[in-house]
Structures are given as structure tokens and as C-alpha cells.
Length: 239
Image (cartoon, rainbow, N blue to C red; front, top):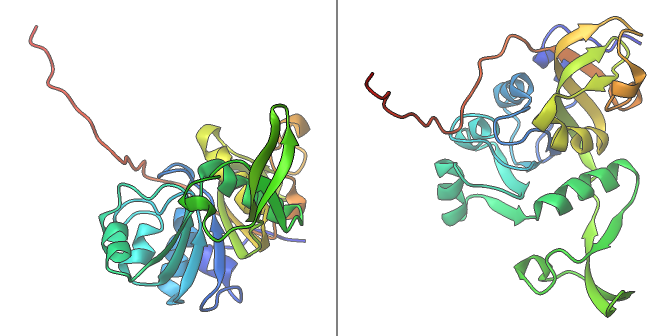
């Protein structure tokens, strides 16, 4: 099975439609599937729901699709650094489902494992628990309350990897591993943009983070321009 496509538009052909749920990898601007997000924007699909750790920054990452009003809802854990996100949320144009970071990662992982729901202590007694089922389990110190969280089953997963072999086995680089890995597993179809593709068998099996069985389509997205969320400088001391 040839999983390599010539570009992002070709890799997404036949997969996009209005009102779909997309699980997107990345952490801030680290490890975001830039080429795939651009292609989704250019396709014109609308009323999208994104499950992603964050929405990028103004006009970068998912922020590009916020600018074009293609996103209806965000399921996220961190939404700072994005003025357009803030404006749309406060004006009622954007629906937001806040989710603690670890819970969001586990919801994606659960969806990828076919688990419809799980109980967690995170969020008990806060706004996160509003409207959710509460169940008591015996703990070391006696009964404790847990809230029910649902696994995420996305229509599409879009992620970015550092290296892949021709069969789709993936390696992620450092911080980019955290949300790209669970996001890749929870979609009906997983499309990956990767910096480098090597021959099958070239990757050390012990270094493969995601088996190729989860990956249906790939593109080579490199080269990339390094994006910086906050540029902090200081004056150079005089000699």
C-alpha cells in the first residue's frame, strides 16, 4: 500500500466535509501539521470542531482557520496567546469546551483504543465537572468522587512527525510527541506530514513511537520555517 501523496491537498482529497471533528497534534507552535492545516483552510470546509491542545496563535496553526471563520468549536486545554480566539469566544461566535491537558490527551488515547469513557479525579468540584456523571470509588483514604469523561472519536486525525518509513511507522521529536501521538490514533483516518521519509527497515524498532498501522496517508512537508510564539530579547552588554 502506497501511503505517500504528493501534497497536502491530495492527501486530504475525499476526507473533508463540513461539520467534521478533527483531532490535531501539536503543542503551541511545536509539532503542528502546518501544511495540512493550510490545505484544510484552502478547501473551504466550515463549521469544524477541532480537538487540539490549543488553537495556535493569531494566524498560525488553527489560528488561520479561526481567521477564516471555518471553526465552530474548539475542544482544548490551553487557549491563550490568540486574540482572535479570545474575541470570537467572548462574542459568542466560537464554542469552547475546556478540558484539562492530561484529560484531553487521555480522551484521545481512549478513543484510539476503542474506550468510550473513563473516570478521573481531575476537575472534580470545578466547572469542568458541570453536567458530567459523578461516581464514587474507594481510594486509599476512603471513597472519592470521579467524573466521567468521554473518549474522542474523530473523523480525521492530522499530525506532524519527524521521521517516518515507507510503511508509516513514525518517530516524533521531543515536545512534538505529546499530543501528536494520541491524536494520531483517535481518527477514522490519519494523515501525517513528516520532515523525512526513510526506507522500510531503516528505523530502529525500539525508536518507533507510532506503528504504521495507524497511518493511512503521508506527505513530506519540509522545509519548515521555525515559528516562535514569544520572541524575548535583551540589550547586549557593552564591552
